Length: 480
Image (cartoon, rainbow, N blue to C red; front, side):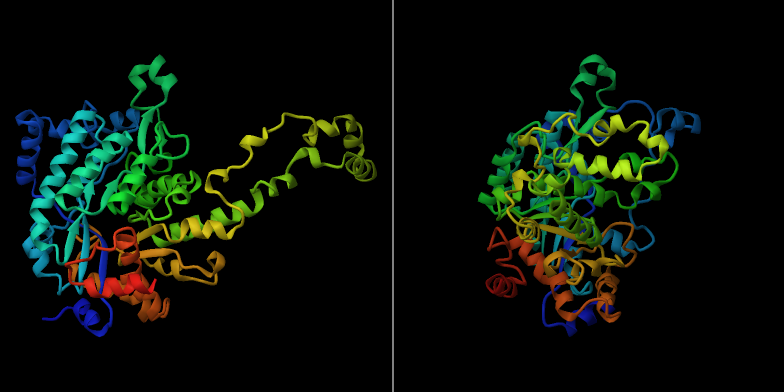
């Protein structure tokens, strides 16, 4: 029986690209690659390294007293489909995945890990690097035969730019062409680690590879552009202070991918990465269109009020003290007039000054007008939205978004994970935005095809060569 998604695809004059779905690794085979990279001990040590070096019981082994005492957050549970056995096995079997693509209404899909999602953030340096190396060997071997309709992202560690570059080059040699990086690195606060080493894993800061980073990551971004790799971040924000419930997984889950993606997007934008590397393309996956639209609108609004010249409206040195004193004398009550000698201090006049060289929070972006923000943001950042995201249409609202732009939201089904109960229905669900008159046909084409082409082929015009969408993708790039 033809699925609703297949029927919708048949009615369209453009391909459908899934910009973010998932494989579920068959771990017995993945472990063979881990063993090849690190020997038998690497397999034995796999579970402890995936726990980030943490010892002691996990949340599900603790009682409530222990959970409250340690503030151990409620971790994911039952995160993969089971009742729909066909879909569960599809995500694990490349040949079956490929065979069912027409049922999904999809022409092409970019696939991301499940077990491997956290490999780039393993704290142990040696194990992190061997795990990413092994994963990429596994992914390339398992999916290479099906490259006409799918490609798997490479897992790239980023604790230093050097290790990132090394694995990027390895992934390129394997034929992989998407770089999945973490949104941040958790680094210990130096003073805490020095004075209280036992707390070094508990008290940390988030290195976004840009602003205040421990390293200069420009060589890594340059290598991505050189090799034609789009960058994708698929990190979680569970554990952030507002997402750290010890009892409720859904409380921790809502918005957490968006929160993590924003760490990277703000850092790259305000740290000037997209200014220095305008050809770099970056995806913030499972972040949602509404988060991208808000971030774009926020940065424009803030710059308009707090750009270098605008700050003069806030500089206490610009207060007219003669006028201020006259106003207070004419309108102040008895209690206020009794303390009028403190007016200057209260208004901030003569207080500590802010040095000129640290006043401009937007300096690294190279801005001279608000439109420059559009040029640093819109072509460079792409926001993944699942098929059931009811607010995806906000990205396409030219009336609300600054300068009449559309934020680059890409259709991302998240196939293989718990929020997709039926792989064959996801495209139909995404299409409902058009059926409900929330977006236009042109908007849906952007969402389901054009923006993914711009993301994945924007820095590598050959990305879709040899695929089912090669002709349409080349035409799209030429048109843009």
